[in-house]
Image (tube, rainbow, N blue to C red; front, top):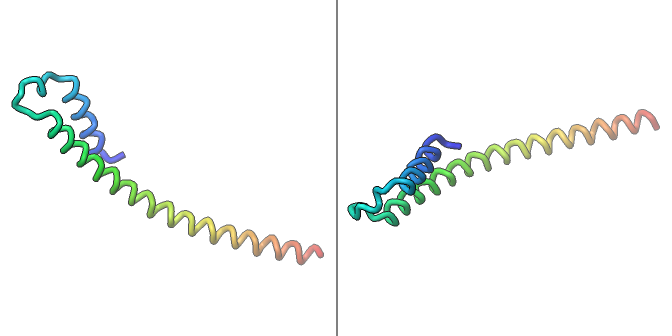
Length: 80
C-alpha cells in the first residue's frame, strides 16, 4: 500500500486514541472526514494502477493461451 495511506491510517488511529478532539478546538468529524477523503483518493489511485497491471497481464495470458492452443493443435496433427 502507498506509504501516505499508511501514514493517514496511523494519524486517524492516533487521533481516535488521543484526547485532542475533546479539547473542542478541533472538530473531530471534519478532521476525520478530510483524512478519510484523502485516503479514498489515494486508494482509488492505487486501484487504478493495479487495474492497468491486471489488464496487461490478462492480455499476456490470452497470448500465451493462444500459443498453447496452436502448439497443441500442431502436436495433435503430427500424431494423427
